[in-house]
Structures are given as structure tokens and as C-alpha cells.
Length: 321
Image 1 (cartoon, one colour):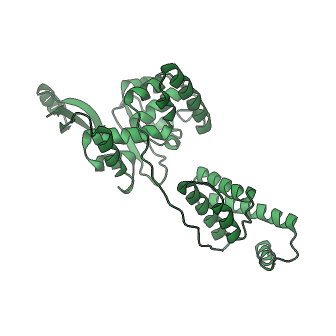
Image 2 (cartoon, rainbow, N blue to C red):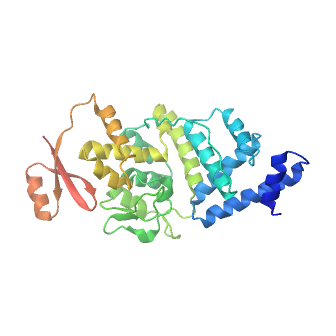
Image 3 (cartoon, rainbow, N blue to C red):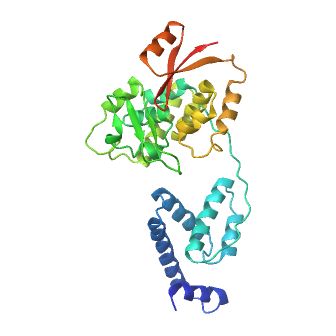
């Protein structure tokens, strides 16, 4: 009898339980499940979160080989819908590895409207942060990359002369993308980074940068008397960039391509955010033109157009109506 079959038979009849052996077998199954996820090509972060969720269930009294026991433990938790979903997904994956199934408990996902800081607040945080955190924040501000995407960028994907940076390691099923026309500020910051490692941020980890961000936010929020700065996270800069991009371009497909979304469902949120942020402000209406040559740029500049953004390698210019 293989270990899995033996474990199932012991737990099903509820007799002659050897808790030490069952615990050891469970640890074996958890480790084997982790290895299987690696073989199946899951992201390392997804694997860590999955294992962490399973260990939390176990620590809070759930028998991971008994779905009803897991449901009882989940029912006692004060978790958000998102947290419950993640735990249920982790347990479903574990049961699938064991060739078992269950009916997950019901939960409700509430998608909150994200916090959108002002550009001045972002710039104050960048200016008050140490390197390489300041460079990392400026990069996220201009490209709306996820932090996991940005920290993986190798120097080979950065062309300082042409002012282009490529995102070739997208997360969450997103598309690879290219970001031309980086600002002079970001170019200088990137140029000042040490080039001793293959990647831009070398040995810096997400946790290290996150800890630095927490300290920088707290210090600046106190110094400037602005508690809103403490609400800025790495992903906040992605939300800010997408909202501003939609505000100026008024084209949700441009935002979708910029963020790398494969479907437009997640992108539509930024229409709602933009409307709520700018509803009570003076109407910012612009005429926007795409520029494909120096001659076109010159002609538009002479009649009041100004460059403001590059999308998919195309310079956009605008002027107020």
C-alpha cells in the first residue's frame, strides 16, 4: 500500500490513528506538492503563498486530508474574500495533487477602489528615499510595471542611449512590453546604479525594498505632516499611472496595452477611478495627435501642441481645446 492510500484509509475509518506517522506523511505530501508545482512551472511566489496558506490552515487546527475539517477552520477566520479565495485555491491545488476534490465554501470578493496619490506626493517619496529604492519607485511610476517585473529586469533590456526599457518577464499572464522615451530623471538614476550584476537592482530583493519603503514612508509622512504618503505601496504607482494615462488619452485600449493586460476586464476599473478623481475639477479636454516625423512635430509645435506621452513607440502631442 502506498503512503497516500494508507493515509486515506486510516483517516476514513477513524481507527488506530497514529498521529505522529500521519503528521510525517502530511509533511511528505506538502513537500511533494511543492515540488510538483515547481515542475508544473508555477511562479516561485505563487508556490510560497500556496505553501504558506496550507501551513496556516494546519496551524489553526485543520486536518488537510479532511476537507470538512478545512472548511470548519476557514469558517472561523475573519478573512477578507480575497484571502479566503487564495487559501481555497491553495487547498484545491493540494487536493488535486492527492487526486481528491471538495466543494469550496462560499465567499464574496469585494474589489476596493485603490488609493491614488497626487504626483507631488509620489515625487516627494521618490526624493526622500535612498537608492536603489528611489530608482525603483521612479521606474514603477513611469512604466506601471509590477514590482516583481521590475526587479527582474536585466541590463541587457535597458537601452540608455535610445531611452528604452523592456519588460520581458511579465507576471500574472500579462504581455511583454516596451517603454520608450524614459524621462531624463529616470535615465540619470539608472545610469548611476552599479552595473556589477546582471540585473538593474543586483542583490536587492522585494522584501528588502519593501522594508526600505515602509521606513521611508513613515519618516516622510511625519516630516511633511502628510499621512497619505504612508498609503503609497509599489502597486499604487501602477494604479496612478494607469489612471493618469486614461485621463489624458481617454482611450482604455491604450491603457490596456500599456499595462500588458491580456483582457480588458481588469483595465476598465481605471475609467471609474478617473471619473471619480476628476469629476469636480475643471474639465481637462485636449486635442491629441500622433507624431511620426520631426516635420509633423515641428508643425504641431508651431500651433501650440506639446509632447506629453509615448505609446507603443509613437509620440503623442496635445493642446487644450
